[in-house]
Amino acid sequence: SQTIHQWPATLVQPVGSPLSLECTVEGTSNPNLYWYRQAAGRGLQLLFYSVGIGQISSEVPQNLSASRPQDRQFILSSKKLLLSDSGFYLCAWSRGANYGYTFGSGTRLTVV
Amino acid sequence: AQSVTQPDIHITVSEGASLELRCNYSYGATPYLFWYVQSPGQGLQLLLKYFSGDTLVQGIKGFEAEFKRSQSSFNLRKPSVHWSDAAEYFCAGMEYGNKLVFGAGTILRVKS
Image (tube, rainbow over all chains, first blue to last red; front, side, top):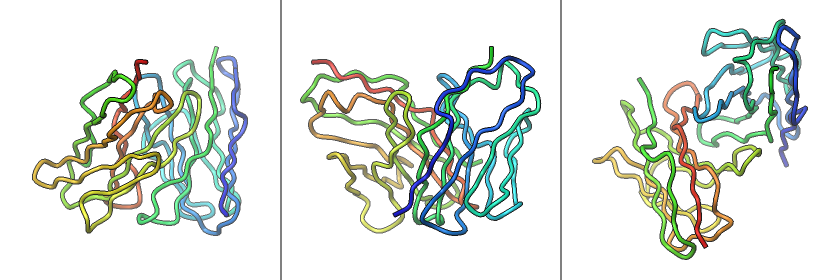
């Protein structure tokens, strides 16, 4: 069966520090991968998606970047965090439109 | 632009009462529609999905949803709410490019 792993679960980082959040999927190949951010009271915002290794699409201009170095690995990064980067970050994977998305358990990022 | 609207930010119901959470979509064609549930600090779990065919879809945990094209709605229902149903519920739609667009969410509180 397919599983999605996301870590760390919580993270407190100072302003200006770098960020790396990792997401991996097991049990499938060539998944579509997604990063969402959930800010308090603002629903879920799609940040990045990837349909293959090295292929990244950005949905909103921001301080973050994403990379997909391997088929089942998706990384969210920042060189210098801002206070506004705080939020709950969710990774998801999909086999295609008919299947919906499966979400990881999320990372709570607090920038102080 | 594709959008999903959940008009109710908070809803409170008594345990054992019926529940209906509203969702409206704005798409050019019939989208794929989903309902997810999120417990505090957790990822999202898929409750049910609609692609085509029967407009009343059954999901997990006793939930169902009805697609009404004339009203552009996909409301979630449950005949008898349990205290464990307290959570945040998200309606989502997908039309092009495998990108899921979420509503802002509805927080459900259950009174005992």
